[in-house]
Length: 552
Image 1 (cartoon, helix red, strand yellow):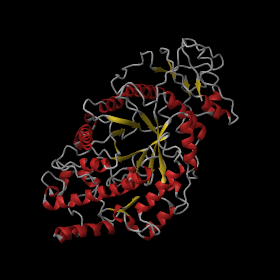
Image 2: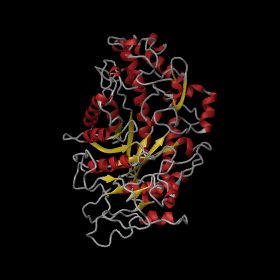
Image 3: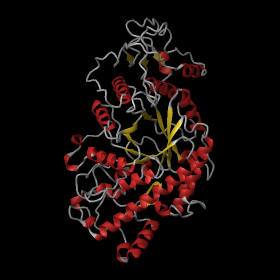
C-alpha cells in the first residue's frame, strides 16, 4: 500500500496521485511489507466510492489483492474495543486546528477523506477535533452553525472511526503549536472591548483575550447571559444537533475550561514573546472581578490587608523561582499569607471547573458519550520546593501540597476522564537548569487519578515522531496496579505524519498500544510487519513480492 506525500496541506493529496508516472515524479510513498494472513479485511470501499463521486478517476487501493484467503493481507489493526487483551490502549489522532474553515465548512474534504482512511488502516481508534466556539457561534448569540462539523462526523462514521469532540471555548493562536488564528466570537470581542475586565489580567495590566476570566462566571456580562450559561447553551445545542451520533461515533466530549482547552490560568502566554520557557509565569488575578473576589476572601479570613492585591514579590514571567521573594526556597509561598492566597487562587480555578463540568454532565448524561477534562503538564521547576510554574497556572502543587488530587476528585463527581499531557517527555531530555521532571509529574498525576477512582488519558505535549517519544508513552501506558492509560491521543495529523519514517513509527506504536504497550517497538525496519519505502509502478500493478496499492 502506498501513501502519496506530495501534499502541501496537512493531509494526503488526492490530485498528486494522478500525476505519478515515473520514479522521478514520485516524491515518496509508503508501502507495507508482507504479513501473515488475517481474516479481517480493511473496509475502505465506501471511502473510494465517495471519492469517485467527485468525478475524478480513482484507483481502488486493494484491487486484485484478495483473490483468496491465503493471499497476504494489508496490515490493519482492529479498532474494536472488544479485545481479548483488556490492557489495550486505543490511540486517537488530533485533527488539524483548521479542520473547519472560518466560513464554517470542512477544510479540504477530499484530502480529509483520504487521510481518515489511512488512519483507519493503521489501526487508529479515532480522531479528536476542536469544536471552536469562535466558528460555531460567530454570527451572534445563540446563532449556531455546525455544518462543517456535521460533514466531518459523517465522514468519520463512514470510515468506522470514533470521534473525541473538544468544546473549545478558547481562542486559537498564540500558544505552542498554534498554526492558525481563530478568535473568540466577534460579538464576545465587542463586549470585551467595552469591558476589558472580562478577560484575565496580570499585575502590570496586560490583558489576555484567550479566554473569559473565571471571575465573572456567574455574572450576566455576555449580553444578558453569564459565561457559564453561554457555554451551557452551546453544549446543549451541540447535544441536540448530534444526538444521533453521541455514544456510537462521538464517544467523548472534552470540556474546555481555559486557555488551550485546559483547566488553568493563562500564566505563560507565548504571544508577542511575553513568556518563554522555562519562566515561572505570572498570576492572572488582576481583573476587577478577581480582585473583588480576593478582597472578599481576605475579609472573610479576617485579614483585610491580604485582599488588597496579589503577591507583590512574585516576580515576572521569565524569572526563576530563586529570583523572587515569593517562590524562592523559603519564600512567601510557605507562609500563612502565601497559603491563603494560593488556596484562594487554586480554589477559584477548581470552582470554575466544577461549574462547567456540572453543566456538561447534566447535558450529556445518558447519551453514551464520556466526559473528559484536560490538565496541563507543567513540568518545569517541578524539582523545586515551590513548583512556581504550576502555582501561577492555578495548581497548588508544592513540596507540602498535592495540586492534582483535588482536580481528580472534582472530576470523579462526574465520572470524567482526567486527560493529561507531556506523556512523551523524559527527564534526561530536559535542560538541567529548568528543574524539569515530566516523569515525576506524570507519576504524581497517575497516583492522584487512581486515588480518585477515575480514568487517565494522555496526550503528547509537543509534536514528535521519534522512537524515544513513542517508547516513553508506551512505558507510561502500562500499569500493573490499575493506573495505566485508558486512551492516548497523538498530536497531530499533518503532512509530516505521513512521511515514510514517521508513518512507520506511528503504525508500530499503534500496534504496540493495541497490546497494552507490551510489544516492544522495533529498533529497525526488519520485521515482516514493518513499513518501508519503495516506488510503486501503478501502470504495471505487478505487486511483485508485496501487495501494494495506491491510497487515495
